[in-house]
Image 1: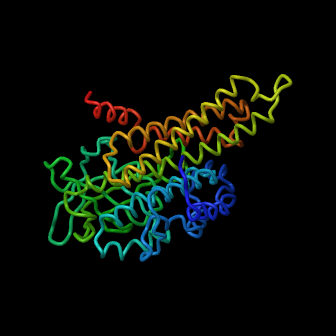
Image 2: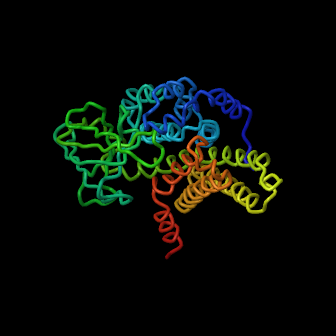
Image 3: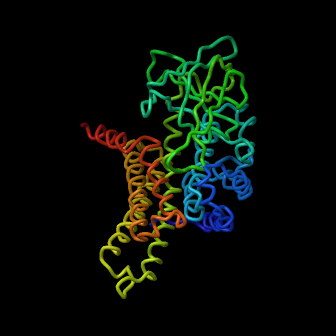
Length: 379
């Protein structure tokens, strides 16, 4: 049983007032594949971007579990999955590493804008030839005086088309393995830094995806997050937050989808009876409920272990695997329960399937998670 106090519940109740406005026109936005700038304004106004940051920077000073609880509410109430994904990406890709590892100067320069949402964040890890193998990255950064010069490219950068600030991971020590990576803060408009056109994709269409290109891009030494060669430590911390925050949004979506299917199964009649009375339908809904409860337990238990500074390597892999695969199964079941209606775009359920499929790929594919679990078991 997960219990939240009155302050936490009040934060979530406050967000609920924004659900209708955040969801308005979500089908049209998905069809156009355009970032909803007017909805981002609402995100700024509702204050969700301030959750995990210190009050001195304009934040609300909330911990990981509270932040997750409110993001779960966003998933439940906002039907624009791409917008929700951009929110979680902004929070964890840029804000969290700056707050946790950034110098006092970096925090003062960038966290107020990140908290307010005036500065949109993204991070650049994946490369065209690297995929899930982050240690194989070829983007290089060589030091020249008080600058590092970046050369290389990145792909599949969420928020890339709209971001103002990028955390770019590059190799500063060619032969140092995990200790050879360094994260840099790079501002949009920096000479030698080019942002590619948005990449069309299957789902999460309102969260733009792009390539990034660096050619003799000079970044001040002071823009390093943490220490040279400390990128793997930063990335490891960020990935904990990324998995927990991104997939707790999916948990909220699963809860909303489950209730929608229950309501439909009670009212939709076939052969003279509600379809929920048929075992083929009721079992699908029962499995959806099982998926919700398993996902909730995995995510929040792992968050508690992170807060206790425990080794969560296997817990995180299991949580990511359970959340992503149950979300996809839930979305597919909902289409089947709604039948022909579920297949129609106007019901928004086929969109859920497209969005959910992404979760089995980003933040480490399902296959990578199973490999990690097997490795931790000594296989």
